[in-house]
Amino acid sequence: MRCGIIGYGDAGTSLQRASGALKGIVRFPAVMDIWARSRRAGVSIIAATGQGVGDGGQRCTAYDDLEAMLAAEELDAVIVATPTVFHRRQTELAMEAGLHVYCEGPMSNSLADARAMVALQRRTGNLLQIGYQRRSNPRYRHARDEIVHGEQLLGWIGQAEAHWHRSYAASIPREIPVARDVLPDEVLVENGYSKGGQGMYEFRNWRYFRPFGLGLIGDLASHQIDLFNWFFDAVPTSVQASGGIDYLCPDFLMRSTTREIEEAIRSTRSSKRRAKLEGELARYREVERWRSDDCVDNLMAIYEYETPRARWNTEGGDEREEGLVSRALYRTCSTSSSQSVYETFMGENGTLGISQLANVDRLHREPHAPCWDWALEEGKGLLEEQRQVHPRSLQLNPDFEAIQGFGILPLSATYSRFLPVYNLPDRVQTREMPQTAHLRNFFQTVRDGGSQDDLNCPAVEGFRTLATVLKMEEAMSKRTTVDFAPGDFEA
Image (tube, helix red, strand yellow):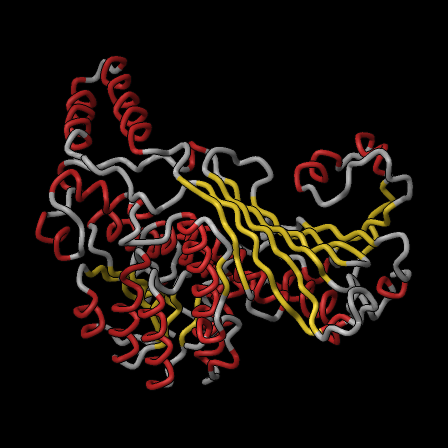
């Protein structure tokens, strides 16, 4: 099939690369981006990887206007990978043209736009997949469907925790281009940005600005909070949260960015490079607004979920109550990359620790829990046994750094019993990029004439996740616990 890429920045590039294993299903004859640098990159990389059309997959055409691309190209689908605020309009144009859409998550930065996208999908009948790729990862699907819900090895999950940590180096502002890569003021304004250096700064660093995206809430948190909803097979009842701009504040961004350029100017011996740096510094000095006040650089949140007792087959809690309350802690920051990205689900009989990082997973069984040996038997293949780990001698274990860093095993020396440790089986491990399986699910569903029910993250699920994360934003601003109403999740 023929798929166009709308937006060839970080997300568009990553999704194109992740589709490299799917050449037998999809080709990319066209790329659309308002920025010439991205258009050049898209055409050259797609040609170099043979993912275009024509002889050897070398042909890919670049467009700076979406409607022009839709009119000129015979496409089956598009990938929408632009700043979040543009998702609704670009999805509408594509679906009204009869195309299926893979939209990067979050699906929008407002519930009104997300509702409109769900309504459009229902009206047109075209497919709309939201890019929460863990739902298609074979490791996550095995853990959720077979271990958590199918065999209920963990028992009732009372707590979950997820984190995604970025260092300052991964969060600093992008450079403001000069010369041929500067967008004309009319293009900036047409797309909602300011003019001049301020506009180019907003364009390059749109994640800092609430009108264009959701910051860490959208980039990182929404992907893992979607996992909470999916694993609990529920939506939350309440959330409390705290967050702020505590490190990457505007003054710090200004000082650190301009100082770095000034030092480079002083140290260079190249007059050509000096002139380029001086031009870049002049553009930065046009910047007056370095970030929105409501795009935080760190946050912590606690969600409460209520699930039916019958789901977990547990004897715990008040048996007169039909529901059990579970809590999920989320945290992310821009000051440290320690512990990277990870999720933990703590049950009464065992704990699952998992990450989208390839082959990073651990399970341990509580000493009182029923034996899991049957799950190791050939033909079952639910788990693979790793080793016995004693908390007091963890430092002797060759995996100590990984175990300590991911924090899925207790390090208390007062706990004296051995903890049986397991891994997910080899058959669900993958060397593919994290997005590949999710893209495969979308493209195969398009090819096979499937429906929304065949998608692993259909639009309505993306809407519910957006409702979940936006309420966290509300809880942060009010500095209190906020309850969800049933209508909050109705698209």
